[in-house]
Image 1 (cartoon, helix red, strand yellow):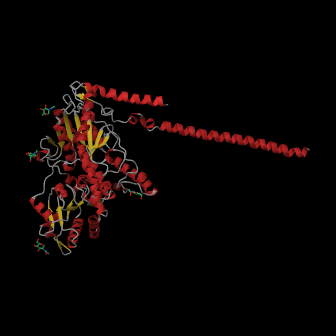
Image 2 (image 1 turned 45 degrees about the horizontal axis):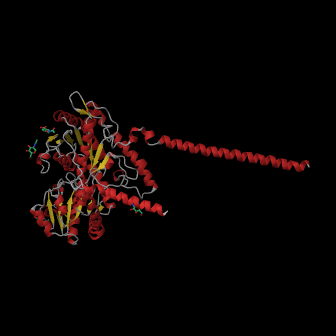
Image 3 (image 1 turned 135 degrees about the horizontal axis):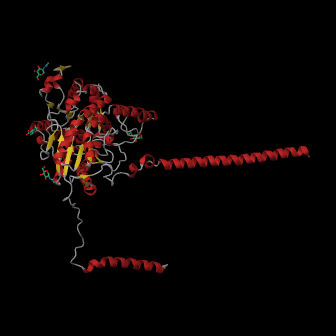
Length: 574
Ligand SMILES: *[C@@H]1O[C@H](CO)[C@@H](O)[C@H](O)[C@H]1NC(C)=O
Ligand SMILES: *[C@@H]1O[C@H](CO)[C@@H](O)[C@H](O)[C@H]1NC(C)=O
Ligand SMILES: *[C@@H]1O[C@H](CO)[C@@H](O)[C@H](O)[C@H]1NC(C)=O
Ligand SMILES: *[C@@H]1O[C@H](CO)[C@@H](O)[C@H](O)[C@H]1NC(C)=O
């Protein structure tokens, strides 16, 4: 025993001596070497077409942030999107843009179904968006095709929303494609515990009754799917440009990399496919600063509310009046001392000049000292000011990201789409309250704002999320990295066609991330064959053992009966 320990000790000493030994004698070699993490991009494919159907700040900024990073790494980017965007922007002017529709204004598209938004007819809104998207399909397809002939793209980078043509052209040309979306729900199949207020359910069904989980998982979900399938007429457009039909209403996005501009903390947690990667919140590094006017207003008003409904939405004049009256009451009761309202698309000409002793024209003329009304505001700069205490918002994804990043509690008036879910999530996470009734009252607004400002938990929870947003906002570089990974896959997998261009198959290109079950078919992929076998074995065993027990039991009863009858017959014969 002692010998064993001694040997063990010697062994250890020997190891230490030997491992130290080589470095003792060689003074000329450094003790450490540097890991080389640089990558060789010299023969990497370089041309990227970035395409967006909807355009505008919300859709273009996340894409262009990633494009800027790729551009700095030596890639060539061409943006195809409606509206004259990059030339007029400060941060993205070096990215050339092919303008699809110079005078495109998404707010005009939305105003065509504004009544449905106001009445909260969410499915009608969805239908209108879908039919608009398919009506423009061939325009976009042909432009993508034409520009690709000039640029000879190596990769398409597509903003997901309504952009069927972008994914189709890449598939048709055999070129890799990467998508980017704001919400996971749009591009993946969420688990049943995640639902949506759009269909009258909740973002999480965690604490819902059996009835409500059944209703949301089966009835509402089927209604929603039926609605989408019945309004899905992209295939007739595809036929016009000789693209094969595709019946998945999400578009041709299976087996390709989808980036989502979001983060857990704002999303309800769920398991993700390796092909769906979260890289949000994507935020620019610089934002427009406060104007001198706004700066002096914010300095003079230490408890300011910022009110804005995003870049293209508006609410009813009636709601605007309710909100303005609430502001006046909050100021009169000294709950807040300042309000900044960025009207953007709100139609202030439709507001009456006075209402119940409140001089609305005075407010709109900035004659009212505590309320500052402007058309456009440097939103991020206002939210990052310490005197801004609350954000009254529609709850669009980028507004939420900016508010979280600056840890500002929110009162949310969701209007449509993902905003209803965003509002519910932020309320659940404890940094916001929402106005759910489309005909909300002054007392709703006042009491909710009072709570948001008085209860410390809202600010605390906002600060907790702020940390997540700050850490995760670095992931736009990861987004660019992932696109490079796809480029690299193309470099190795691409087969040169007659013109010397690389061709790939998007269904199999990303073998590092495509889970094997997608190739195994439905039955084998879900192991239904194995489960069926185990059920059959189990049933056979059950039936078998039941049958054996029954046989044995029958044997014994027979035996007993025959003995009994023998016993009973015996005395008779005796
Ligand atoms: C990038 O685009 C420019 C202009 O179209 C072209 O001159 C250049 O060769 C391209 N670079 C690469 C690497 O393809
Ligand atoms: C886009 O905007 C830039 C800068 O304002 C301008 O120079 C250019 O002519 C515009 N392009 C079109 C097609 O209107
Ligand atoms: C559900 O109820 C549990 C227990 O009361 C609570 O911890 C959890 O936060 C609730 N979840 C939601 C989404 O309300
Ligand atoms: C409202 O205020 C404006 C000044 O901004 C003034 O001209 C107008 O007379 C006021 N209206 C009423 C009804 O007090």
